Image (cartoon, rainbow, N blue to C red; front, side):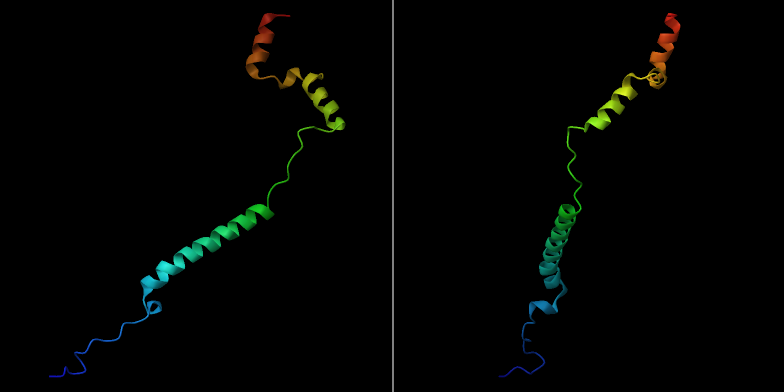
Length: 88
């Protein structure tokens, strides 16, 4: 006895017809693309390396700032208060 056409099993659909197939294959592809884009942006937009040795022109200005006549004015309040209370 033959089954009617309505009861016959349908042919299986390919994976691209299902949302979960796109999710399973598409999500990792999007993640790899985003990571690659982030790496390119990080490499191209990297900040320049700053040399540890400062030029001589800045050294004189730094020494003037640290030991100059206004150095006492930049001390924290605790040091200034203690200095003022010593009565030098």
